[in-house]
Image (cartoon, rainbow, N blue to C red; front, side, top):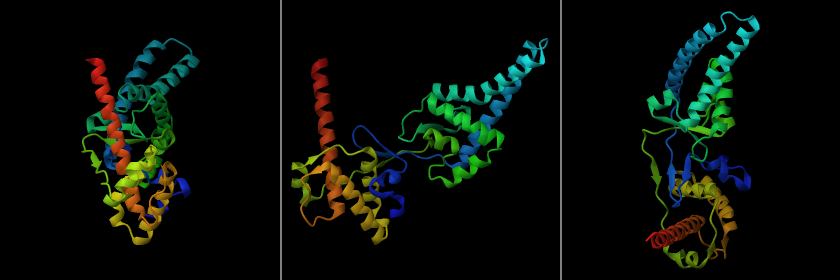
Length: 273
């Protein structure tokens, strides 16, 4: 990880990686599916599609056997669109990101923020997938998946999705602890809710800071602190180390979120009883 992962002032958006933030403010790292298992899943789906295509062509052939060539051609086009685009889109939408191949291998397509895909996402993936997988023999899909950090093919890039493995264990990124010498400042400061991307980036940075080279560590720390302080008032004590300040912000923000959720639970319990 280096400062090259940033794109200026909002660079944390490029650095977020493969994580989402739960309602309790806990960062969860989703296990990205590898290229090999995605290829196996895709092969299963291709076999299923070919079987469905053969069956559909047979049925359609009987229906239009005594019609004109124009009707036969139109029916053929409808069958192809339905099998290669319509059916995958419908299946992924109804199963919330799963196909036969993904179901068999424990995979699921999710949005970039970790949420379930919609018909729009599924249709975009199917439209581009028809070109990159069926027309171009899967070569663009394989190349882009190998080069992309999340194993995305072109359809995923256009739809804003990626594929995760549901059989791998989710790794909960441990929250940073409150630096004792900044506890009073953080407790009294006005700390607004941080954007999810920024909060995750700070967590990632703090958990992996020791593995960075000193130059990148210092630069990333200051960049993240500059972004975080936009949501904090007053500023931390002069001379405070960026990593301690970031840890204090995240720790106290999480404490406040947990307290708010606890209050809401107690209120809900009183109303229901």
